[in-house]
Length: 290
Length: 135
Image (cartoon, rainbow over all chains, first blue to last red; front, side, top):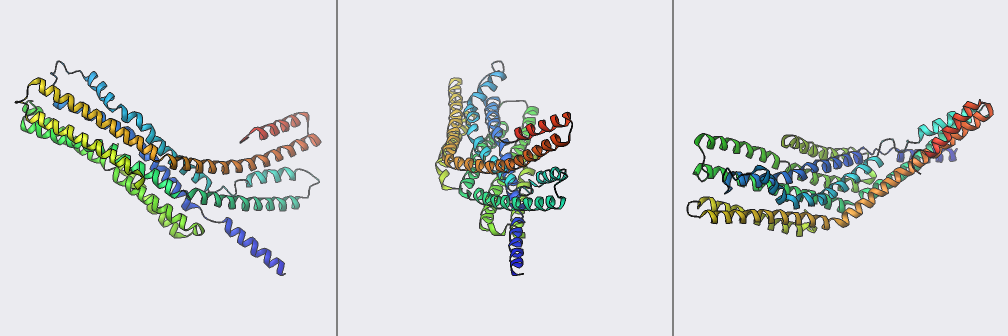
């Protein structure tokens, strides 16, 4: 009787170990992946802003006459000026790709059906055993249940260990994410800042008559430049939610690491919900900007 | 922002300064248009364009620094990703092993009770189960 009670206690304890809800880890991983994906348009955006800056500068303030002005040549020169950024973007892309792949695999490891993924295979095996006339059906069923249970326990334990290991790289993950934020602030954001400053200058030059053009055309240019400034302001606004998302991602990771034994707690879900909220805001701004 | 990235921050600061100098030159050229000769205006414009090229080069150097400053972290995270992949692969191996056993049992059944066609199908199933998934 005592032995049966002990066995029951062991089974209950093992089963409760298996039942750890990994939704918080999955959400963390999925939202981290989204951050890395959201970064990618900024790479192309930086090159575009750099090239637009050069083209508009030649358009508004270039010393060439209309006859000498060659749009193809201007585009070529702009591409040449910005080539170092386009080339080096590969480096920044590697940073976001590393973070994205990590998040993708973490999500897969924390997958809902990982521990029970072999159940269907065992069921197929049991069905096949059941086709043997001499094999007692009840024994097949009992063995199938036992194998399923033991495999689940082994996989769930290993799964938990893998998740702990994956979450243990807090500093490296934080550094990669910080590098993405720094790029967005200083390269992508740097060119947007340059262009906003240039556009304000162009407006001033037009108003002061430093750029000679007919009155109607001057007014039209002022309208267009004002619209362009609004567009640039929207594109610059992507940086803040990206920064906020990364900051929350780091806090969420810290929370998950500090509570490896309480993954199923509602507090964990609240923490990852904060991250999901920041990432949602990031995507909303991305939609407006691009 | 982690202090590790400070060197890249300094590079980006320098690039911003170059962009600002280019803007100052542009303002000077436009506001003094009447006083400058066309050659002087052209020379100033060339200087601005060269400063813009330098801005791009220095910003690119900042990105390269981001790459080198995060290299160890990337190697570490790539290692963690590979480890997670290996775990998922191990599970697929278990699935595969059970699949092979099931297929072999099917072959045994087919041999004892089935037709030549059934045996052939069961043998194919064993081959497929053994060849599917991770090696």
